[in-house]
Length: 518
Ligand code: XMP
Image (spheres, rainbow, N blue to C red):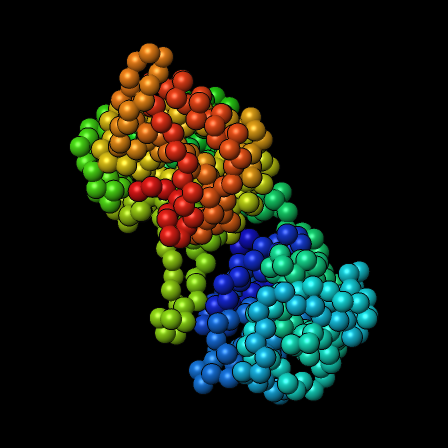
C-alpha cells in the first residue's frame, strides 16, 4: 500500500463553498479531502486524518433532522475547526446552545479580536478589527464548557470561539472565501500551528505518489488513453507514461472539429517530444459526413459522442485490447455532493470523459488526476515538463467546433470558423488578455447579411465573438473588452477571412445563457 500523505478531513454539510476549504488547505501545503457528512465515519476511518474541518450548510442545527458530527470525530482528540454550521453543530453537540431567527447576517462584516489565539497568530492581534464574510441565520448563544470567545462581531457575539486545550475552534464567518481577506492565513494557521502539519503537499510529492500508485495498480497490464488535446488528458497521459513507459498507448481521435493547428500540435508534442506511443486516427470524414445536414444540437452532440466511442473502440481492438483505460477525470467531477433538496441521499456525480467506454470494453479505469483541482493539474503539467502555453490553455469542449457552428456543419463553415477563431485568439494574446479570460472563441452563425467591400456588395456569414470570465464554468460573466479591442478584432476577421462580413459580440452571462452556443 502507498502511504497516505498527512490529511485533513473536510466534512461537507452541503455548503456551496466547501470546495474552497479544500483548495485553501492544499494551498497551505497540506492534503485534504472532502467527504459528505453521511459518509464521514467511513472517510474518517479510511483517511486517518490528522485534523478535521466541518463545513457550513444550508441546514439549521435547530431543524429536527439536522445532520450531526459523528461522535468518533468529536471524541478523537484531533484538532477540529468548525465553520458556520460546523461551529454551531460543534456547540450544540458539546453542550452549548444555538438559536435561530435572531439577526440574520449576510455579506461583509467586521469582527473584533477579543483574545490572542494560535488561530490568529501572525495576522490578528488582540483588540484589532477585521473584515470577514458572514452568511448565517442561526448563532451560538451559549458556549460549551471549556470554550471561550476569541472574536466577536455586532451580529455574531461568538464570531470565533476556542477550546485551546482540546484544540477545537469554531468561526461563524467563512474563512474560505476571498471576501474574508485573511481567511486563507487563518486556515493555514489551523493546519500548521494548531494541527502541527508540515508543508508537504507539493506537486513533486504528488507526482511521486501518483507514479507509485499507477505502477502498483497497472502491474504489467496494458493501458490506453484517449487524448483529446485538452490539458487534463494530456497531463494524465504524460504522468502515466512516466510511470509505466510503453505499456501506455494513446489514441488521438481527430474528429475534424479541432481548432487551427491543434491536431498537429498534440501529435508533435506526444510523438516527438515525449516519445509516447500514439495512434493518430484521422476520422474527419466519418464525423463531418455524419453531421452534414444535422441541425439539432442534441443530436449533433450525441452523434459525436457515439462516433467517438466507436472509433476509439475500433482502434483499441486493432491494438489487441487493453486492461486499463486512462482518463483525465478531476476532483470536482468525483466529489460526492451533498443534496438537501433531494432528501438525505448523497448525489454522486459520475463524469466520464469517454462516457460508457469502460463498461463496454470491460476495462478498469486509471484516473491519476482524481484528487486534483484544475489549477493543480496545470502545476503538475508544468512539473512534468509540458510547455506553459499548453497547460495554460483555456477549456475546449469535447464536441469541438461542431457546437460553435449552430445549425448544420460543413467543411467550408469549419474552415471559416477556424480562421476567425485563430485571429480572435491571436488578438487576445497580443493584448495580454488570454489568462484573464476563462474561455474565448468565435461562433459562426447560420445567418448571412449584406455588406459592402471595396466597390462590391457582399452576402456572407456573421461571426459572433464570445469571451467569459468564470471560476468553474458553472456561472459566467461576459468579458468586458474595451471597444477598441473589439473593433480591431472585427476588422481583422472581416478583412482576412473569406466568408465573413459582419462581427458581433455576445454580452450574455450564464445563467441565463450557456457559455457555448449549443
Ligand atoms: P456551457 O455551454 O454548458 O459550458 O455553459 C460550460 C463549460 O463546459 C464546456 N463544455 C463541454 N466540455 N464536453 C466537454 O468536455 C462537452 O460536451 C461540453 N459542453 C460544454 C464548455 O466549453 C464550458 O467550458
